[in-house]
Image 1 (spheres, helix red, strand yellow):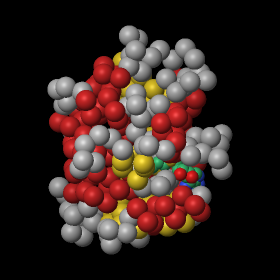
Image 2 (image 1 turned 180 degrees about the vertical axis):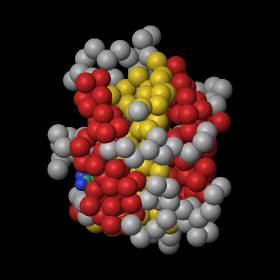
Image 3 (image 1 turned 60 degrees about the horizontal axis):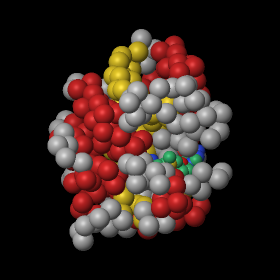
Image 4 (image 1 turned 90 degrees about the vertical axis):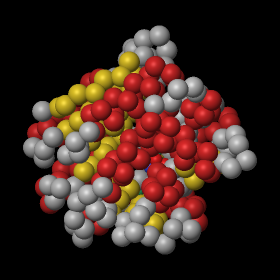
Length: 273
Ligand SMILES: C[S@@+](CC[C@H](N)C(=O)[O-])C[C@H]1O[C@@H](n2cnc3c(N)ncnc32)[C@H](O)[C@@H]1O
């Protein structure tokens, strides 16, 4: 298990994922208290003066977010979160999904994040100490999230694996299907990289065949998909999306492709099934 999200924190794909997660959380809170379950939580908070400097991914992502003019509302909402963590200006600190969600919790809400890698799990617990309703636990997120989802009604679930293992696509789809089969009111958002369409199509087909309800796919492509070795874009696939999700995803992916992409960049939001 070598994946270190600290190299990728604050990249364009984190921006897409986190802006949509923020919107999904706010939308769900309008319908009452929510439990958010994060299968792959990571460290919770990232200091971009570390590994991220070498990767330059944050430089091409969150650094450009913070200097961009005319940010649409859902992008502005993420920029406001980043600003709050950097009161002296700049973008040294970037929130992972745990801190981002913990900061947004309201009375009666809970956050439960799982992390497999022990040193990262220790960082996660430390990052969440200020929020008693937010908890980082050790464990296999696919297995534990399913157990946790069975104890609550209508959870919001984020599945965000490293996709370094070949079975991450299958396990993500199977976990989403199991959660939705148990509770049709759950919403599950799955992040994936976009390298080539073949792999992604197989993943979507698996979700469709599970017959677990509506599936919304939000793609942000930074360049044409002609080099399958590269992360050319990313997707957020939302199973049982709330109303308004299509417009929210279009705003987020559209801004990302237009502002951070190459000449061949584009955003696509579509329904599967
Ligand atoms: C992409 S990062 C998560 C980023 C985080 N969701 C965020 O948005 O800030 C993936 C994390 O999953 C962890 N991981 C890998 N396999 C796991 C598993 N089966 N269960 C839980 N965590 C796992 C890795 O150690 C890594 O920290």
